[in-house]
Image (tube, rainbow, N blue to C red; front, side, top):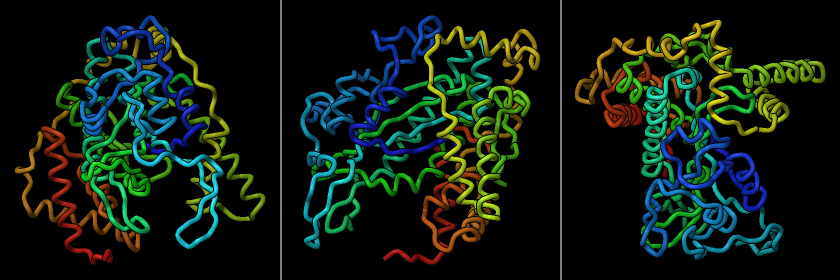
Length: 432
């Protein structure tokens, strides 16, 4: 999965974020998206994003793309305050362990408050490899496509995923005016392999239509993870095809029958060379599965395998080190030389122009075609789940469309939304 989501708790979660995500060298503003980091260690400073920025500072707002200071980040995720003014947004969070009376008169202790959500957008391995080996101009194009894809998906999520709740037991779903978020770009994995990815840290406060600041409904965010991930992959591929003419080809996955799409020409052997982290996790997971079988006398279920893989991910996680990007690229190109030759930038240039598919617009697809996509998606989802949500169907529709290329991501999303509507028209609603 190329989009992952995890909660950030007040206190410990904020400290982890500062240590492992917001670790740029933070001095001044970079002269371009990449050039400053060729010679200096660290990553770019965080930047503000989200439509909710307009609601900050008493309505004065914050400019999207403005640099996030450490103080602003602490206000956002350490205190749930306005990062500009320090004003408390919504109810002050309860201290951990604070006793309170619930709606039934029972004494409860407050859990650790959720300060925000870390949505991590990771480019497919073939994209990261091509980015790492490309010339500076092509690198900038790839990087920009990644950032645009992230911004597109966050914008979609603000319309369809990010909501709040009000009323008794949170029965009323409240629209929000957007989210307040900070984006942090990273270049590598914990194993030192190229991994172009962005952490989008969303504050767990958003302004509703009545002007009140409320918490986000985390349940909806987690349920939408697969749909957001599938949308990011598709949007990124459209941007890169439009900018570089790249083609895409399906490749088998280790743990799923659903293929993943990678850049045509970046073969599995080259991807494996730069996937040491995945290999270490897989080896550790296999050892845990063997231990499970010995202890229980049976193979673990799919859910248990997922839990074992999560355990393996944590147990094999090395400390992440900051390096100058130029040094890393020299190492990456030396490692790739036996597979692509000494002139890696020239090899990347040969990936261009491989797309042979038309760039579609929404009007190019007939109702009959959309009905076919809708039927296939509904059959897949209904075959796996007794009940399902719109996001489940949308994710499958996007998978059905991934092999096609669109002239613009808005065209792809319009088609996907229409096909999802057609699919849900054939389903039986169980929501009151």
